[in-house]
Amino acid sequence: MSQEEEKDINETAAASLPQEPRKEWRLRINYRLITQNLSFLLFLAFVALVYIANSHLAEKKVRRINKLSREIRELKWEYLSVKSELMFRSKLSEVSKAVEPLGLKELNTPPQRIEVKQTEQ
Image 1 (cartoon, rainbow, N blue to C red):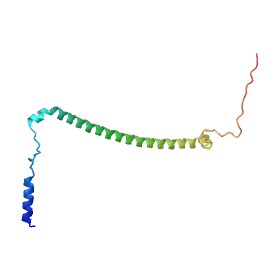
Image 2 (image 1 turned 180 degrees about the vertical axis):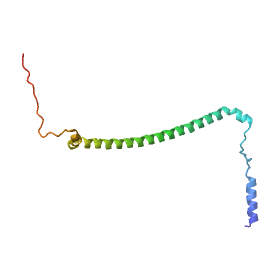
Image 3 (image 1 turned 90 degrees about the vertical axis):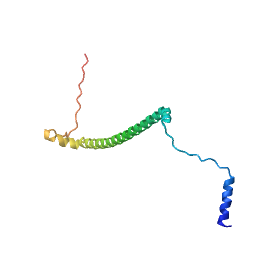
Image 4 (image 1 turned 60 degrees about the horizontal axis):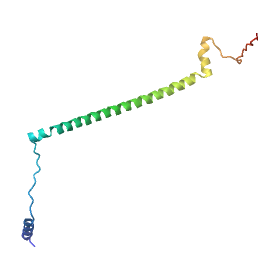
């Protein structure tokens, strides 16, 4: 078959099919359409503003949470270092070194207990 014959066959087949009118999808914006849907457009604008504000607030809270968690971690480290320092300084040998310049000395004998006897009347 030649190319001309194929064209003729395609044209006759296309001509025999019922042709639908082309639909033109154009964006038709006019004053009447806008005024009829003004409340809906305002609602959509309000929802968009609420959505944007909500995402900003969420980001702000996430940043604050991260900042507070870092601060808590630092305070925990500081607490542990102060606690270990206190444990070291409260040892008997460290306390005796600290009070030696004041003239206090460690006892060599154990403390004695004093008991007072009550007399019956």
